[in-house]
Length: 334
Image (tube, rainbow, N blue to C red):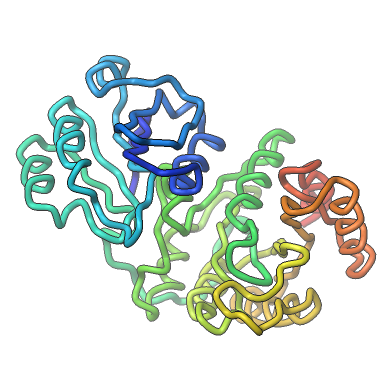
């Protein structure tokens, strides 16, 4: 899917900043695309964007009302329906990444169809994908991988894209999750793709390209996570990565959602991901480490980064603390 910007960020009645994490990510990485925010009574999230009513946003050129808030159960609240309809009537498309589809709400679906507006249910792919063939395709690809879920793979991929572009690389972020799709404006949420077609979806997402072009592919979960490794395997095969960057959160007590199961070590994680990646690209290798040190103070973060480098002999960094420049240094030779 392809979402048209500029966006008006819809925060609904989000009770806190965490409930608006999708909007927070979009506003951080694609702020020029965000004209303003629209909030309902009781909303406690704030992106620091101009407050815009629907009519003012439409007059300013907003093309899509982007639902950047998630409530319990991922449903479209009844109080949201009227502003969604009004946005359609003012000429905006709609985009949301919730479990409940906008297109499943008859009044939204029918009004959008009557007005010729697009409704993007970002979590749910709107097309079919071919079976992967694993054939080598031109262009270069970097995939963010991880020791666990939610360790910063999207953040790492976006930081790498930013750093590479600043250095003159021909690089593009390829989104594989709903927040990433909203940030990129296009992509596919691969965890909603039937398992037989995940690798094919990623091949379609990152097709043949110029020899010096880099696709920076957003990673999902980990091959060592018992719950979600199936999605990761298809992603690794389809991405056919030339390079991988391993993402990790120091001091995490256990794998996400699995109390009692320790987070695997660097060596085991690298070994299994390199073995899987070499099914479709025999030259695939891990080239750096990205640490999420948000829970550490500055001194502890510096020690963790140095320890990772010393243990693996690979460049390491934190995308939000000092950046990943050392990791990018090594990509010019690939």
